[in-house]
Length: 312
Image 1 (tube, rainbow, N blue to C red):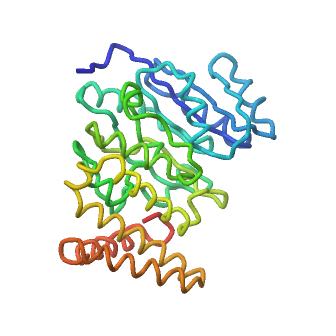
Image 2 (cartoon, one colour):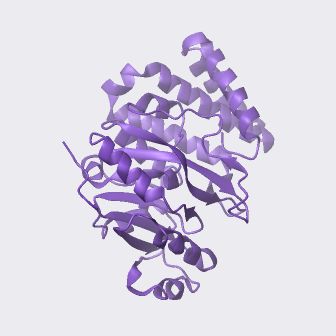
């Protein structure tokens, strides 16, 4: 059984690419943590602006890891993980902010749940001013605690900035999948693999502020949800017995994602591809309890709570 050692080291990995305008603020939010035993690792995906100089101004407080440019968040995060020494790992995108008690709260949760592989909380999104949230990540969504695998099959509720991982669990399940097919959903894939083998513990409260802007890679809903479908297919291949136990949840996940792809494509005027995904959504809905009625009502509720500006 794992335990939390007194003042266990936490590695905060900050992947970045051309974020000189924001990364200093992100680093300062980690330096302001009330938890004292922290190492900050900036993994730089070949920035061409003055990101390196901004990081250098923090001196020995930050470990800078220059990487050849690949344009893949998975590869950049893995680059940071390779030098991380902590018992626990947290991830902060270079244009986002941790709140001061993020690390101390989540390390304490690991201490209370030594069996856990993952701890997560809530975050909120903002545009320009981090003191003015637009929506919370978990608005209208479940917050499972314990065996979260089935809930995650239905849909991803974990923002990377909200999560802390036990490093030993990564040694069991592996790191981020660098396959380009999983671009922008590599976190969902990893969290599912952790949840397949270890409990995930929810700790209420906000731990980070996540910036939304025009460059966010999550804005292309059709492509993003198509990649979620690939992640579900990977889970079927990796954990056939476990997935068989949660077939209803898997079918619901497929239905939701096919439906989301279809909706995004219809909004883009891509009628024929959208019809194909609508057929798939209908087919998987017929395999869920209530023929998808429950999932549809939950989707309507989420849309009402979160609004069109938030990820469903």
